[in-house]
Image (cartoon, rainbow, N blue to C red; front, side):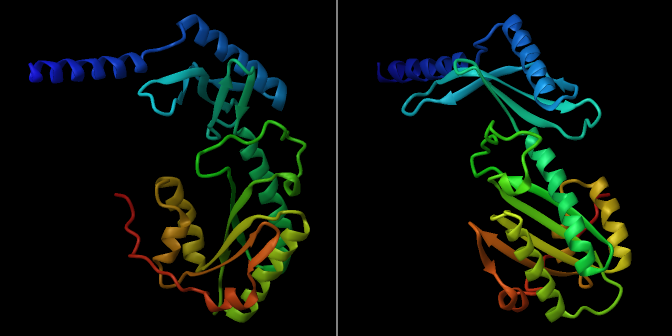
Length: 266
């Protein structure tokens, strides 16, 4: 009898989980939601987007095995930039559509501003990666932000990597001063949360790494540079409007960390 009860309990659990995984919206409802999302994005950003057919958006209910379907989720990308895929959530009951395409736009603005700021200070060829961290839970950016939002008004942490073409031996004291000047200049622009790393590399690495990145997206330049003996790493940090890593800290931690040599993908 105990075995039978145990068996029925297991079957009930499996059926419960299986039913939870079932679709909560019909195919026609998903198509209608997809069309609504596509229209919303086009109006918000004034450009055309390709939107994948929406699926159910679930939230976990504490203490229960099942989740509630609260709307739809999908992915989309600008027709003129298919590499810029982003997530969209449509909270049906609230009538709110959230997306993180604004992160792409703000990162583009930030890269442009960084290039104008950093190039004259360093006086060398540079490449810049920039993005934003919306939090540990993968939260969507607030819907109050629009394409007109300034980088100083975008209330998320900026993550910046600057790659510098180094043709001669590096003066760490001078570079520490440059990094400190750059991060304090960003703070003056209203960018109050930023982690910024600088990678000083040989001309060959500077050109080659860009190619490696295109071929192998799983290995970023940070990992590759730290594994190279001829690439030097330094960083600065501003948190909640305060400089965390000033000149002395930047200089003290210059080129501290290394990794195992990078192995290109065959």
